[in-house]
Length: 134
Image 1 (tube, helix red, strand yellow):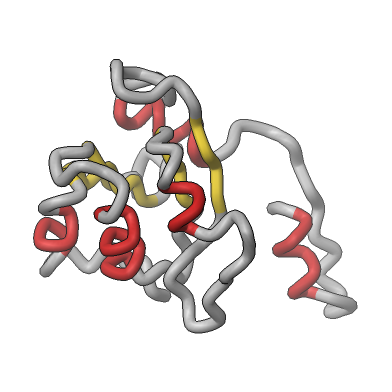
Image 2: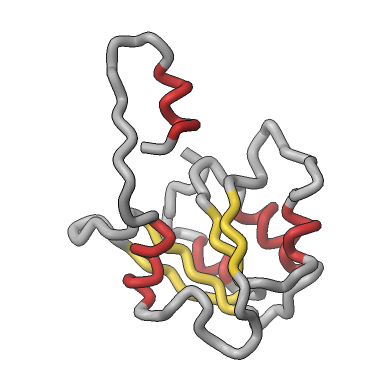
């Protein structure tokens, strides 16, 4: 559990504990069997929180600004409107840029990987029910 998530619990007697360990983006890399800086196009990584939510963030590190770097990006996607994210990424990344959606990264019985590109990932997700909006 991350610190930001503990704030939501407040004083509800849940006593959340923050346990350092492997991030879900590292578990996603393992599921993809690739390093985060694998490839020739980018050797930098941007880790970022959700975008495309109802309470849209428009700070200086918004998705459009981050995408200009064309670095590898890892999104923590809970509550993300994937269509909005892909539309914004499409402005700065070629349509053949690889995209992977990894659900429940690191959970052997629940892990799911959906692979595509900027140009086709939205269509690949149709009917998949990846539950990115819940």
